[in-house]
Length: 165
Length: 419
Image 1 (cartoon, rainbow over the protein chains, first blue to last red):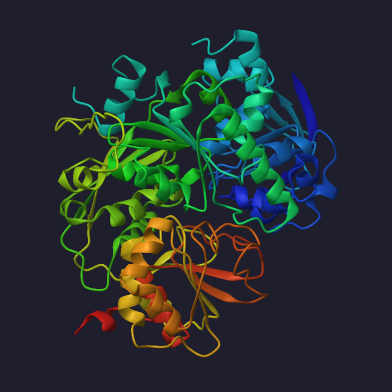
Image 2: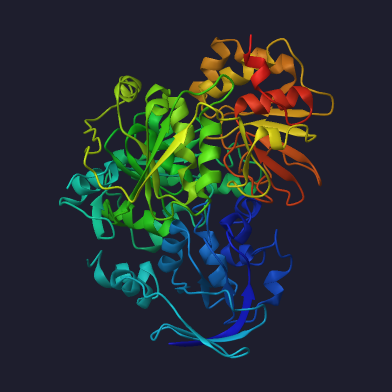
């Protein structure tokens, strides 16, 4: 699958409190409503800057902190097609795969705010259409790739009737 | 080749000898989920077509993040959880405290167990020598249906804490120092084994404080091998059989790190990252507006005793607010019996009912105003963590927080222990 969109670049150690603040976990239950507050504490109005298909680009340890699956959900609900980062925190990693948000581990240091990217999920390539150049992503373990290919854990689980190790 | 504690527990639960890097399906001993994360574990369970829990005695659901309800939203969520638990016959708590206190106190997690929870600080129970890890709602749903979950077997980092803790220096200082050293991603995907003379001497409360914050360095879990301290603590709480495991002497570690506690200063994590830790000397004198003794890592019995020992007969500084929220009802009751609550109230503290208030409740309790500086015994100082992104949060031990509350600025706790 080919994805194309604009890069929204964040730094290292973006935690899940930043992705969706705890106060909205308390005040809201609807994930579409929560998505409007994505990254609000560190980038107010970020939701309005997103066009469907855009990418979030992080540095090291993206998604650290709280286990809130809503962090993965609001990224999906806000229209982000994939997250690229140098490394991911483990609970967020599992959550994103489970809800069907592709995560790409790659050297993101050359990507700048507003760059247009073309991502080939199957080949594991990220092409920077604005600046030129291609970076290669780390492949996922086959078992995890299967969950992602199914569109997330719900479809995987229903299709396989459990785990197919 | 010998095995680490994590490898031994995962091997037993996977029914085969495991190796780091391998993905295995493992049997889960107990689960816990609370009222905060969306979707709720029960909603994901229903979404995945779940009809019946794998074992209702091993499924714990409780209300701690937004209990008592602050608004209709929370009340509706609470009602939904209550109804689900009644229908499924699973274990339910409300008002008993924070899940990471209640799970060990009530014997739902035991040495040698494999436990998952929809909260990143589930690793707290690693203090009992369990493999306890935080997961999201969908992973929980799968577990609630099948009683199993997949794991990538982690490598283990062994952290030996040697020497002796100086007076006025506590488990919280040790862990803030460790996280500052290894960084917020230094143990990502790995398990951490805490060991060495300081850990051997440490109480269960101290070990819970330590393991709670393993996730703040990215670890899958933090653990202490069970010993007499562990088994004595578990006695009378366990309601089922359990199999304690200890690491093999020839276990293979990804890394062995040594930390000498003998000359350790009280540690303070500065805004807005947990790994921004510095010795107190670097920040002493910073004016504060609010002091919190709260959370699953910072408001256990020992924490309240330490804070009360400093606050006894003293008053908090003018213009300072002090919020104390015991981590569980069991702790609150003991604190009442020991007269600690009276000491704290006399010093000027406000006391909250036992839950996640003042740590992550998200606008529930003790929200700071713009520009406020908060010093807290909690585990996270992210921007906005207390409901206001324009506040500045410092993390410290209960001793440092109590001393700072008295002096109205970040203060050295050690003089209070030098009698």
